[in-house]
Image 1 (tube, rainbow, N blue to C red):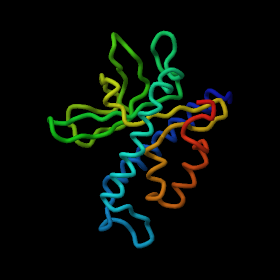
Image 2 (cartoon, rainbow, N blue to C red):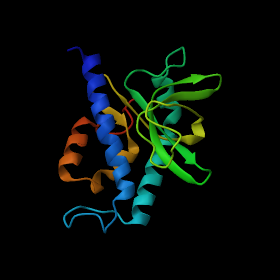
Image 3 (tube, rainbow, N blue to C red):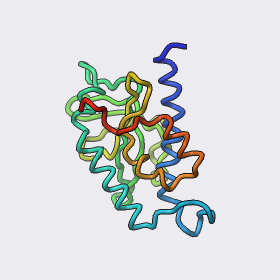
Image 4 (tube, rainbow, N blue to C red):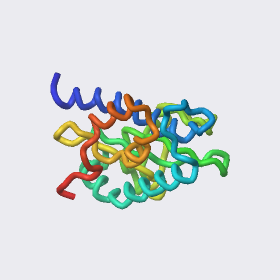
Length: 179
């Protein structure tokens, strides 16, 4: 199996793990967690995610430079996490891949099922702009995942097994050394 195919399969598997891990963190609170499960209290979790999103957005321009080809289409092993607003009040973050730039707006397909929206489903097309971006990732030539700032922030809240699996895939730093 060539490295591209392996990267795609690995990426899709990780995207599923990444989505579950990143979104489970929002719904698991102290009352639902097991006695041995680490839990970040609501304010600490919010602060960690906000800081992670800020870091991801700080590197967004560089990510887009390498993720988008000359036609404005994202490479196969890249995804972007955006915030959507349901019924004008509730916000939800969702992963989008593939994605691309068309007529000044980004468009892509939902990778996960939105919980707060009845009108959008996995595979549906969405349009968004850079202000909606909360995170991103891509697989480097080394086979490691760069980005995934929110997942990195939530590693302490995951089960040790899940954290180990994700850590094996993640690059040591979210941004490549040459950035």
